Length: 274
Image 1: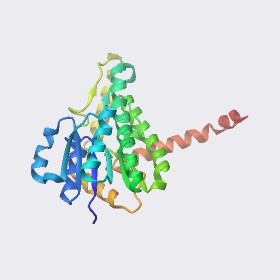
Image 2: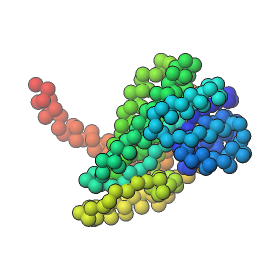
Image 3: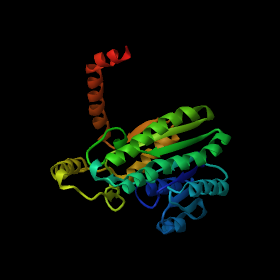
Image 4: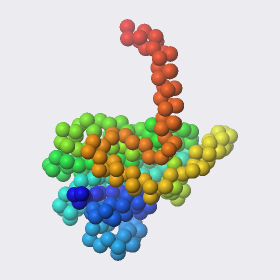
């Protein structure tokens, strides 16, 4: 198997760390970004020069371009670009502050946009590459108390579907990874929370119970590393792929409801045509 060069954001924990380890263990090279690169010290000690740790806040566009350039210059090429950095903003829409709303989009959407823009000239020049966008089942369906998070992931979904069509002729693949619930700290230390309004307490409690039921058997991040390698090594990788057992049924129920609703209201749609 030909050695590959990865650029992965958000590698201090969760998917980013597990995928970094998996890539290094199979002999690939990785430029790994984190806000605190000290979290990568153990991997540097184990894998040496195969790992390039880069301190990065993905909301800084200039720093994103500089990091991608440094990774390319250091390893001589880029093969796989993984936009994994992101977090979950919890809170009802009415509770969101402007700062919280903007920060969610800056990280989850613009961070991925800047890294992708920075990498594309190199991938186009070599006429190959694979861009992995870490989305979520929350990029397909939506639940209460996560409106701004859903907004960010739905934006990433549309951006990436359009991007895939723009870069296909250059030999570049785009894949959206859409995980369900996994044993990461996405809903823990990495998450942000609004100041809660008591008017939503009943809905919040009901939603938390439902989420706890869904997370009764969370996915294993280490197992996800084996799965991502199958996506990476596929001759024709998918535009979208779920990670975990739960997302497919959630998506089917949501899309069945959408189709039924659109069919029901098609007479009004036709009336609007004139």
